[in-house]
Length: 228
Image (cartoon, rainbow, N blue to C red; front, side, top):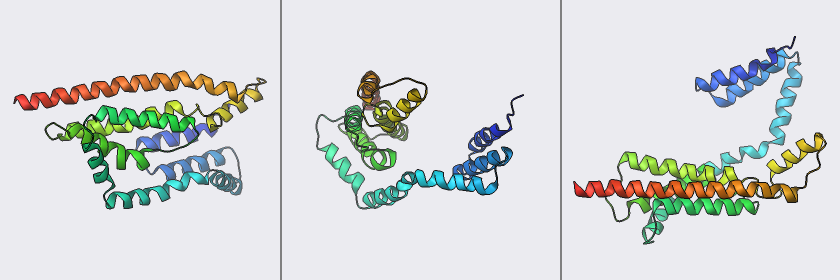
């Protein structure tokens, strides 16, 4: 009979996140409990956790990014972004977000990670999209503002998630290559990345449609306000 007790960590993570408990504490608790149930010494468990943290310590770089973005916002980054968009006659919320998606995909294809929700969406893309939506129309209400902000966040997901593997040296491609090689399949990175291009292109087209619909709805709402 298969011993399923080591899977108790999955239940702990599921329940902890569902209850909105501290994410880091939930994960550490799940790791400790899983190790103890699997009869691993507490010293070995801590050693594994420490080794894992050391190997992935670059993940903590966001701690440096957030204060920097906060300082830039404090000194008018959002206002400057809004002013820039305000000076562009043809700018719209959808076009701003679609442009960011395109830039995100191009930089991903070059192996450059220039983006992210805290670094680009909150301080730049969302304010620029709001400013573009506000041009030549009545002020946005709260519902419209949150719609623009949510679409701005979506632009990051479409721009990054669906184009992560179009760079030949992407970590995801290396992981896939390693898994297949362990199973006896010889794959070349120079061929693998090509299969990610259709997904990147399809996601760009889908978001272009979403952005067009968003602009249409904002204009329709504005016309209704004017009629009143």
